[in-house]
Image (cartoon, rainbow, N blue to C red; front, side, top):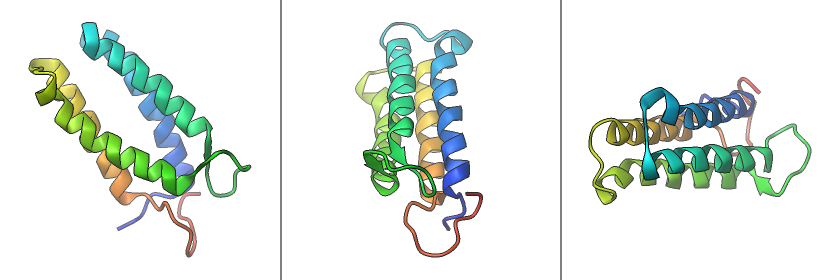
Length: 119
């Protein structure tokens, strides 16, 4: 069920940016896990700023494409801890981040067609 409108989605994107930016310090992530978290914060910020959300000025990334990118990133974050052989906090953080991103992805209304809740 697609219940998250574009306005709420945009807000959640900025919350995601902050989450990735503060995770290394808050959770004690180090090395590649920390560098990746900071990088994901920057990448997610850039993606959000370049996305054309419904009712916003035209930008290079359509909201539907934004959704595809988030779906792929969510899956990648869940798989990453096994590829990187992480355990403990880094594994838990990246799996949780992937699950949250996929939940937002699964419940966001990326396509037009009817009223946009919480826009």
